[in-house]
Image (tube, rainbow, N blue to C red):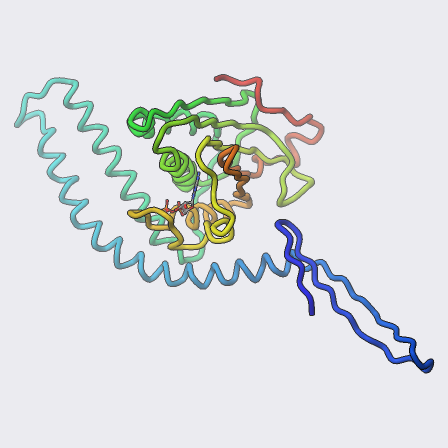
Length: 294
Ligand code: ADP
């Protein structure tokens, strides 16, 4: 059995030698099989196995984080109590930001705990452009610190996606933070949105959000592993960001993929089915990104 594993397609050749009546002559049957799908399923099963260990581990971690987080929440409430302290509006705004972030951490802990359980996600129609704009404030200080320029190229004519807003926010954040961390010496991040064909179901439209960086790219030896839980090349990394993102996007009928090279940097593409795409946009031409805002 000979296996030829290409970057996108996986082919298996089987050669069956046959004896013939004629001396000195040999025949053979060669069977060529496309086993790309089979390989993908095998990889997903291995990943699912690792994810179940992740579920057990996350229960312990979440429990440890929840208690101190509840204390931080309580003390923040006390500190912004208007009857006890007379604070300027500027300070109160900062406390609001802290509270908002505490809520986000609580939601993320819940996500991680739900990770190994069957999906019970609540979905809503989401405008990916709005969601992206809302998240920019969470990246601004890191962008500034790393001298990174962020360009938004958001296509205005996009249909909404049917997705879980917290999960999606988590995915976009993971991908953008990875891009920032890949460019310690500065660079550019381009976030684009566009309408395209779904790679999961070719008859449907998909909304695609791509995040491109001008970092060093992902080394060839690491490319197979980056969606695996606990795979990290960072000293303080957890290796959970992309595996969780992959799980979230797959549960919502979408896909997450990447293209990378040392010269061009890395582009992660998050693809989600357009809400009710079959009925709502049957003859709509695909929009190329590029005519949106920058
Ligand atoms: P973590 O960020 O904790 O390492 P992730 O699962 O988010 O975990 O990422 C796994 C690995 O994928 C990273 O450690 C890094 O090696 C690689 N990676 C992800 N995004 C990028 C990127 N934009 N550029 C280069 N490497 C990346």
